[in-house]
Length: 323
Image (cartoon, rainbow, N blue to C red):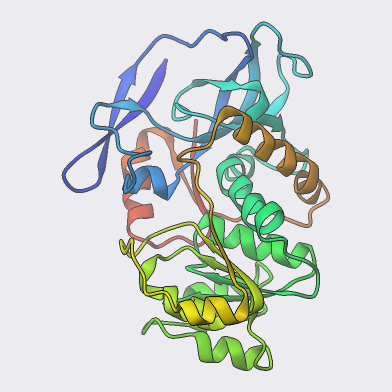
C-alpha cells in the first residue's frame, strides 16, 4: 500500500513515500481504510523530542475512514463503519489505530471534515474542559488563533456560551475567524494585546488564556488574565521556549498555569482524553454546533505541497489530504 514517512533534518522535516505491506490488526486495534488525513503542525515542525524522527517513521497523526478489520477483543465496531481517530501512520491507504482512540464519524461530517477533528479537537477538549474548566459567561482568549486548534477553541468556546477574544498578526485571518464565531479579534503585529483585552472585559481580564504562540507573548497573556484566571501552554510557533513570568501577578491574581501535550501521555491518559471528548464534544459535531473548518484539501501525492502550505502559515483552520 502507499504510505508517507517523515524524518527530521537540520532545519525542519521531509517526507518520503514508500510502498509497505497493509497492516494487520493486533489485539485491541482497528485497521481503517483511510479516506482523509490532516496535517498537524507539531509533527511537521518537530520542535520537541516527542516529534523528532532522526530515522524515517510513518507520518500522520489522525485520519478518517471506514473500518476495514478489527483485532481480538475489539467490540462496538464492524467492517464499513465510518470512524475517525488518532495514531501513528495515518498518511497511508490503511492505518492501524488503537480501538480506544477511534470514535464514530457524525453523519453530517464529510471525510475531510472528520479528518480535521481527532488530534486538534481532543487537544481543545483537554485545554477547555478538564484543565481550563471554561464555563458559559466566561471570557476565553486565544492567541495564534488561526491554527486548527485555535479555530477549535473559538468554536467550542462559543458552543458552550463563552465570550471569545482572539489575537493574530493578520487582519485577514481575523476577518475569516468572525465566521467561526469570534466575538473580538485583536491584530497583534507588535505582540501587544493585553490593554485591548482588559478594555474589552471592563478591566476584569480573560478567565482562560490559550498560548498557541510561545514564550514571546507570555508576559502579555499573564497581564490579560482575570483573578483566578487559567493559562494553557500548548504551542511555540515563535520558537521561544522561555518567557518572562511576573510571579507577583501569578501570586496576586491566583493564576493557574498548565501545559497540554501528547508527549508524555500514557495509553490510559490518551484513552481517558478520547472518552471525555466523545462524551462532552462529539455531540456538538453531531448536532452542528461545531463544524470543522477545513482551509484547503490536497491529493495524497501532493503531501509535500500541503506541508509547504502549512509551514507558510497561510491557513485558517485545518489542511487535509484526501486518499
